[in-house]
Structure formats: C-alpha cells, structure tokens
Length: 160
Image (cartoon, rainbow, N blue to C red; front, side, top):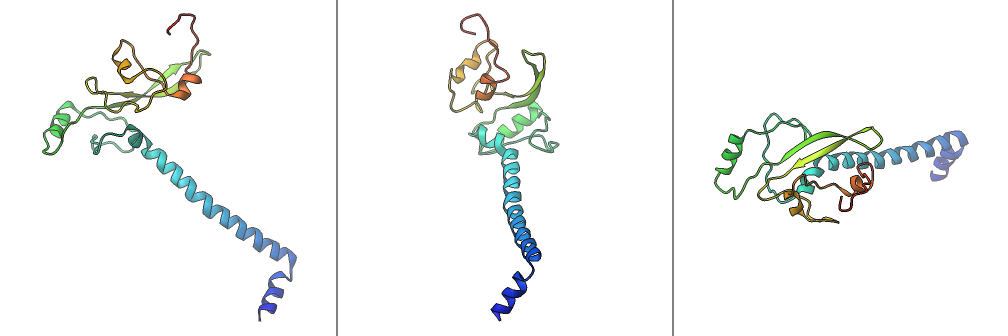
C-alpha cells in the first residue's frame, strides 16, 4: 500500500516538485508572519515598557493609539491623585518635533517631557551625563543613535 502511495506521489517529477515547493513556502509563511506580528505588537507597547516605574498609566479617554497626542487636563491629574491607594501621580508629556539637520533636511523626533520635581520616566542607564543634567538650562537627553548619527553636530567650542 505504501509502495503504491510513493509511486503515485513521486511518479510525476513536476507535480512532486510543486508539492515540495508548496509545503516549503507554506512553512515559511507560517513562521514569518507570526514573527512580523509579534514585532509590530512589541513596538506598539515599547514606550510604556521602556519608561518603567509606573504600574498604571492614565490618559485621556479620547486617545486612540499609543502615539496619539491628546493631553489630559490638570484637573484630571488631581482626580487621579485623589483615588485611594494611589501613592503618586505625575504628568508626562509625549510629542513630536521636527529638527533641522546640518545638511538642511528635517528629522522627526520624539520628545518626552518629564516631571520637573521627580524626573520620573527618565532613562535608567545613561552612557554619559546623569539624569539631573535635565535640571540645567536647555538640558536634553539624546539616545545613542541620535547622538552618534543624524542629530550629531560637531562644534569648535569645548564642552558642547
């Protein structure tokens, strides 16, 4: 019985090659598509996991997706602080700006504004400087890709 099945399967080389290629392609798609899905989903919530510290995030009810910028009113922040069991609640700003590069092109950048008093939401590890440097005038923190890549600007002044 198995001999007849093998002869039927391998009797026509073009059909056999088509079956093998079809199974190979189906296997590739079945492994590739879930990995793309997982990658997209992890990018969706990466800002929240990278910011850490907060157990609960409160935002405006009109926010439709993670990069939707709709600020909460200050009165809502006080309402959250008044809930029993909430130890602390501070505002965090997230927005976009266009930075002009040295070559004249523009680059869209994510801007994260932190609470002045606590600096909650700042990076846990920094290669240079410290989080308290944000308290200085015009203090900013740039990620490694921005500091070494497009946003890097060479100056002749030391310390800049």
